Length: 549
Image (cartoon, rainbow, N blue to C red; front, side, top):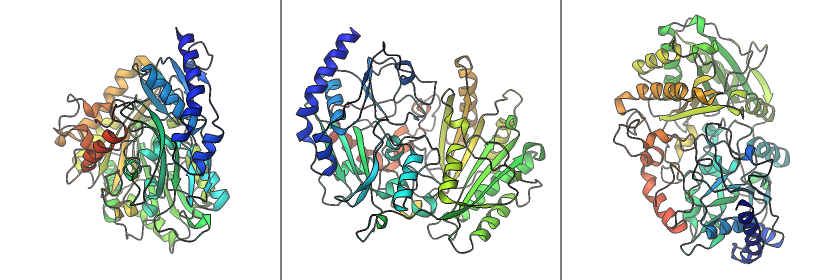
């Protein structure tokens, strides 16, 4: 049965690769794809590659699809989608495999469309924009943009994340306070969609006001992956870009940055000093998160690790080219430790999500691309492909209360849980992110001061209940006053769709009375539903937290 399905799929793909080429939007990229539609392999259960491709980076989630289709061109993607639709197969879409939840790998999926072989990065003179294909890993994107043109996008720190889902979900990183979200620079997107009649075709949508497909571009500026179709290419041009040179079209990467990586030993912290340390982080961000803050060039990640890890870690970066960069960094580090009787020490080992700078006693000046490699590759905990994990997010509009920090301390020091790969990661936010209207992109959270991710990692399925239970406990206790989730209001601004958590759709864990779509999309959800009804009227592309048509 599997073999006959495979033969039927290949036959359909061979026909559709030609038949659908003319349906693609005009333009150099589409013309190239139509002229020579490279086709990827179809991997079935009898293929030795099958087992390794039925899971992503989080081993909690696995699928048993009829096949995995490797995608190598836009025409290949059109043919693959059409074949799956014609056969009535449930589709999921993967670029880098880093989805925290089960959107790609679950028991209902019958065909995984894998875009990890679509890895192109370059400049498109026809659109006066840089293109990035969805399978390109972030570190490769940064390397190619920087080495080729000296430009970059303000994306995430994890080197192995695929561009596809990262961009669709909004995307942010250490340059976002200075330059906004990745999607604030998104100019166009090419998407394979399925119409009401079940016909697959590729559509190009831009942010131009007169583009009849503009709503499809908008939906991919923070509306999350796997909702509307299969993205085969993104293009980037910064708002207000002028001139004809490629290097004029995107933000210039910093030449050098000042970086600091320090640890705060747990054995120097009691509850009072822990509360003050975490409070200081939040207080600083509350004071310095406006778009015109002199500190927008500074960004920090505070890894509030479980006591079993031995220390808390902080990585901070500031553009060395801004006036008084060293003073900005010194002032920040002094503010974080103010009133805390703790002696920071150089980070001498990886800190979960944060890099170590062995033997570094003082902040260090590094070339930006070197620092980007450092922070991107020296995080073995979150990139370990054998781990199981649970993740829960929140956007903060105000600082923690002291009671919340004491709750954090209780869970991070409890005698009933001893996993060193457990952490609450606090990320700098605000700055230029907050200089964009909430409805200008699909990413609605535009007045937060920092965001966070509760996460823990483990190896064995038999320990799932322990770790998922711990994560639920700390999350629901911290947000107890709003029903166990960061319900939007004066203090919180919901959750980040790139850190998806199916629990928020479960009233046993979300007792806020706020529907899960409003946690992720706020006031943009109704508009996203309209886009869904137009571009995916059959609900072909869906998962546990997809846009409901």
